[in-house]
Image (cartoon, rainbow, N blue to C red; front, side, top):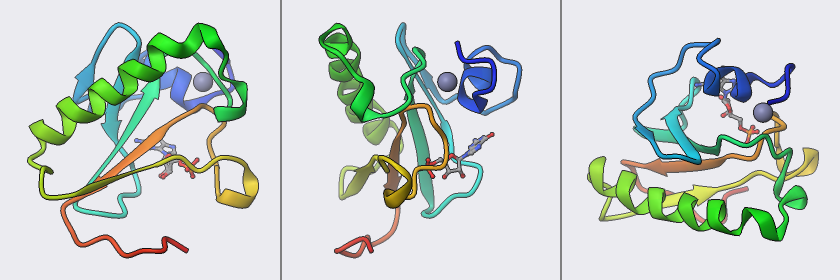
Length: 114
Ligand code: 5GP
Ligand code: ZN
C-alpha cells in the first residue's frame, strides 16, 4: 500500500467507493467522473504506479484483470460493445499513479479517442 494513493485508500476501505466486483487480486468500482453510462475502474489491489512497473510476478494479476473484464462486462450487459483504456503517463492523461483499467460502455464510442 502507498499511503498517499487514493486507490490504495479505496482498497483499504479508508475512502468509500461502491465496489461492484472483487477478487483476490482485483477491485472494481465506478469512476467518480463518468465518461459513459457505464464507467468502471478495474484496479489491482497491489500498488503498481503504471504499466511500466509491472514485472513477471504480476502475470497472474494481469490475466486476472482480463478475466474480471469479461465477468463485469457481462454483468453490466455490455456484450454489444465496450472499451478498456489505460492512460499511461502524464502525456496520455494518467492522473492517478496506481495502475487502472477504465471500462467504458453503454454508448457509441468514437475512434480515435483523442
Ligand atoms: P486516469 O486519469 O489516471 O486515467 O484515471 C483516473 C480516474 O480516477 C479518473 O477518471 C477519476 O475520475 C477517477 N478517480 C480519481 N479519484 C477517485 C476517487 O476517489 N474515487 C473514484 N471512484 N474515482 C476516482
Ligand atoms: Zn495505490
